[in-house]
Length: 445
Image 1 (cartoon, helix red, strand yellow):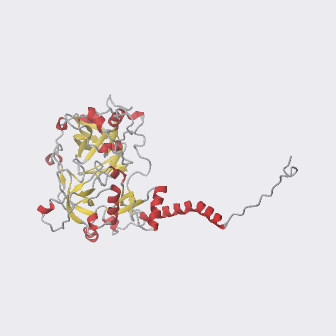
Image 2 (tube, one colour):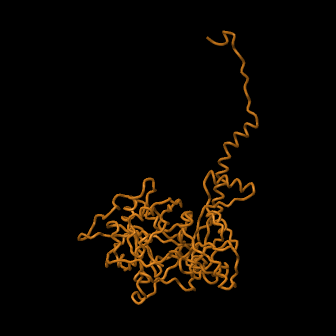
Image 3 (cartoon, one colour):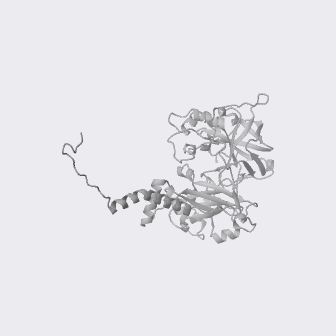
């Protein structure tokens, strides 16, 4: 029965949307698109063009460690010869900036100081707050010390990305006179761009960062600056303390000099003291390697390092990493070979077989295995997120890997190496032959 027949019919008037309603709906629909566009524009503005005359060094596809948690890497693998493990190179890495994200390689060139491009740069903070000049007497400057920084004290350094761009004669923009070619390549550094502005636009950018993620700040630096580039860019020379050494090094950027990008990085890392980026100086005394390393008389050259802790190369057995990872306390994140920042990751044998190696051959070149790698707290830092676990893997390692009488209180994992020649090559997939084994005794710095 209809409402009309019951006399209950009512007239419902039509509501016309007002202009304000139309505007509100339009803004609600288009504002997210506008904000996204502004965010993308901000990201593009913070990035630079690809370095002219160069190509990017490293893998173009997925990492060779993408399958590192596969069951087959837990121990000795198939393909043994006469009962002996067939060891092979699984992954190769170089770390242009100490304690920052590394670059994975297909082929690595090894020189007397280690993997080419490895640890040639390092961040450092000023240990005192009073200013000094280049002409300040050294006795007074001794109180004013630049000390190297690592993820041990600043875990977010793991999120600072690096790239290496090397001269490429096939590039359309290549010229032997191009500054990028003259400096033998470009170092690219990228980190989250969190600088706030007091203006209305700055506040909008902060909101965009919260909604869409942080844009990145990108910096291009000559990898091997020429004397002209050093003078033009105003790079200074200063001492940088790294363990017991104080090598004279190039100051590439510093908050003392009001370099904007490193001011932003200091804010991102949460540092209050002055921050600087140093580069190994070719014109000053290198850091010579002794302790457990073979001597110059045996090698025919004096091994040195850039900003590595102690030795030119670090080799790591993936089976050993997997075994440690299987013993971690419940709730700890999966352990990666990346946690230990090796140059060379190997597979093929059982866990800890490498502990007794003294001399090996990788591909066609020999290497001296000088000592075990004594571990600190750095592997507790997640290599991607930069978050530090409260105890692992250090707790587990100290439970059963304090195996070297030279440093009985600290755990060991991996081995330190010195190349037998000043110039060699290794590739992913190279076979590794163990030429000599024996005992090791770690010598402290």
